[in-house]
Length: 248
Image 1 (tube, rainbow, N blue to C red):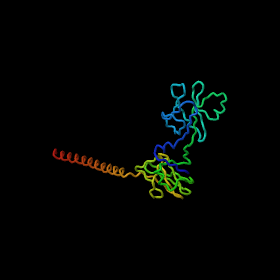
Image 2: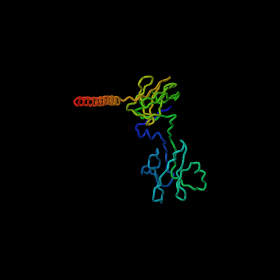
Image 3: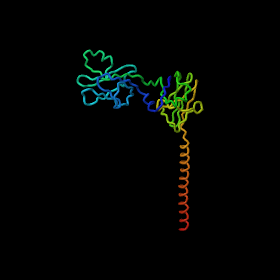
Image 4: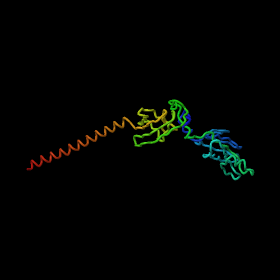
């Protein structure tokens, strides 16, 4: 992992995990983003995008090019029959017959790269010693149990390690070489640890005091239940013996 990008709110953080599109109105109609008319806009894919074509009573849903590489441009167009489509800019430039009318141009300005980026809230990133890491090193899972995960790491220089397990702050603790280390929330829902240069043993352990308390209560309750059951059996046995003695 190399660069840490920080955001102030969880909404900004989760939006940063996708693509950021720059839209431009190229037609004579009206581009609507969440029902508001705009000439240009930056969107992330969860907005309501529509286009009002002059002389057409209904609005047209605008489709984003989800697979568009960063830096390339696509055009949302309409043909003479009123059908809409997304075409690469190069295709439109080669359309000498003028089969399409441009409505909206879109370009991916920023695309999340999980191999080279880490997304974090500013409040969490403030716990890091730096915001850029070389990403040199290796991490290997040695053992996995429901309440304990063990990793072996060997990193060159200080690094930010991101694990595929879900970040869950209640009960889970991290230990690096036996020393408790804060678990960082990275990429909105994953666990991260800042590691120092060199080899390390990493353990994630689920340790919730309430769990131990409830477990102890359950054990004591089981002992009491078995004790009552045993006393009941003994009482019935004594009662039967007394009854047999009186009968004789």
